[in-house]
Length: 101
Image 1 (cartoon, rainbow, N blue to C red):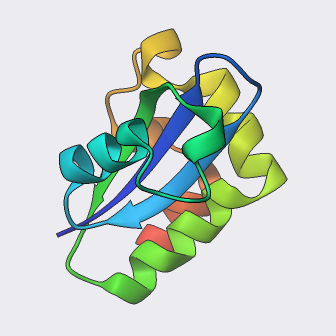
Image 2: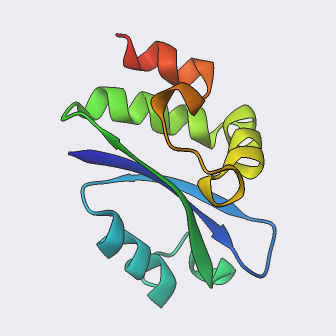
Image 3: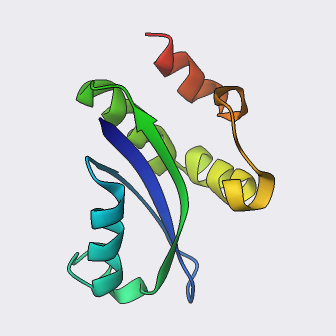
């Protein structure tokens, strides 16, 4: 399974969106500073993760959406810790359209 995840810096205005096979391992790599791109913005909190079927191409398209300005805006406004996101219907319409493929 592929996972789309988003982490938010606790000290700066920075959200990173990624794609992985293991969210927990990847989150810990970001926290420990092993990832060059995110190291300067530590520490983080995980604000979003989504399991995607075993289709990397679909997972990549969803990741691209969440990396866009509108995707990051949605993450800031609708992260599960803020809104209690719990169902697929709560996802942005663009992601729902990609999932219908």
